[in-house]
Amino acid sequence: MIEAVGLTKRYGAKTAVYNLSFQVRPGTVTGFLGPNGSGKSTTMRMILGLDQPTSGQVTIGGYPYNKLPNAPRQVGALLDAKAMHGGRAARSHLLCLAQLAGIPARRVDEVLGVVGLQDVAKRRSKGFSLGMGQRLGIAAALLGDPQVLLFDEPVNGLDPEGILWVRNLMKSLAAEGRTVFVSSHLMSEMALTAEHLIVIGRGQLLADMSVRDFIAHNSAGFARVRTPDIEPQQREKLSAALTEAGGQVLPEQDGALRVTGLPLPRISDLAHESDVRLWELSPHQASLEEAYMRMTQGAVDYRSTVDQRAGLQQPLPPGAVAPQQMPVAGQGQPGWYAPPPPQEQAPQQQPAQQNPYAAPAQAQPQAPAQPLPQPPAAPPAAAPTMDKDAR
Ligand SMILES: Nc1ncnc2c1ncn2[C@@H]1O[C@H](COP(=O)(O)OP(=O)(O)OP(=O)(O)O)[C@@H](O)[C@H]1O
Image 1 (tube, rainbow, N blue to C red):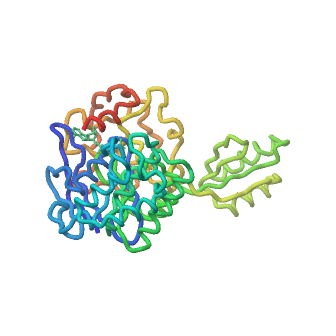
Image 2 (cartoon, rainbow, N blue to C red):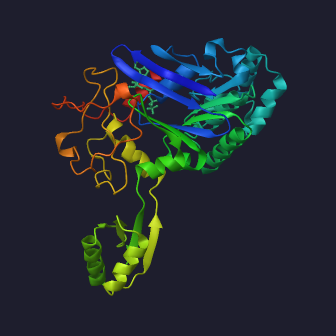
Image 3 (cartoon, helix red, strand yellow):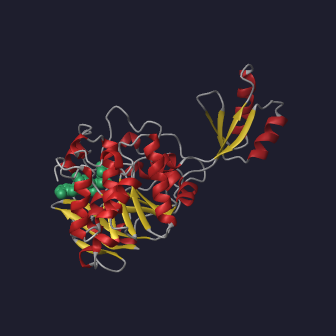
């Protein structure tokens, strides 16, 4: 098990991770989600003893990584697939790692087979594609047959077949009782791979719960209703009846109506009473991606000036939890907290509901009385990556 308690990391004036507490348990795949720059890699680096926490601690099986007996046999990690000697053949690279960790050479051939690189084992890794590099990084993580595995963006650069392979690999590792902690930006993939989620925003915990609960708590179900395409007046009639009955009705791109706030039988009754025929009446649950976007929309550091949160400005459906205002890490560092621009302050957000996923008490959001200076314009798309690569 991985356990973080009050984990905080500051780089000068920048707070990358603030007061993070969570547990990653064996036997399930735990997804680690957060927008760019939210502190996922920093957290993983602290778990692996590559960065020292400013305060708090993180342990694996009760030990900080650096005190873990025979760490390479207990913990495997893929942090940066490019971090290898490109001039070395794939097999030689793994052999070096194995020798350093006292792992027998035959294990190298085993893991090369597991990741499907056996045929290119003698090729230099600098000629590898992104996906091949990822596979080699995963092979290195599996080398010590560890009980605890960390993967930072493991499907980065993989083709659909590779993605499916990683998904099944993660699940089978967890099914063997291992602790599997995986960061990813691909929500659809996380929804299929992870059972549990830890979500952070600007270095702080936003959610620690099952994928199912996360979606249920951060989105509301809705109904899709379609009337005959050839009779638009039926659609208008139904829309009016549903609205009058207290439902919220939004048009879908294909001409259907997205209805929230009314149960399906009631929608059916209202249609019947209005003498409107239905071609479709179906229940829907928002996707993990929609739930995630809603939760983290206040915690995104890098946003295009063109795409003003496209798709996120719809009113929150009834029953969904309004995204929290992001707290000020370390209590009010200048420039750290940037409120949304005034026109985006979403006054129509749902009434004050207790957000069960708010950060711990001392980090409760304090909406500033005066708007703080706006964040700088979105940096060039590559900026966050460059920042990381520069480390
Ligand atoms: N060595 C460092 N020195 C200064 N700032 C750093 C350093 N490492 C990380 N940061 C900053 O800490 C914050 C968190 O970075 P981190 O790489 O952990 O985020 P992330 O969630 O992994 O991002 P991404 O999804 O883009 O990989 C960022 O603002 C980053 O610029």
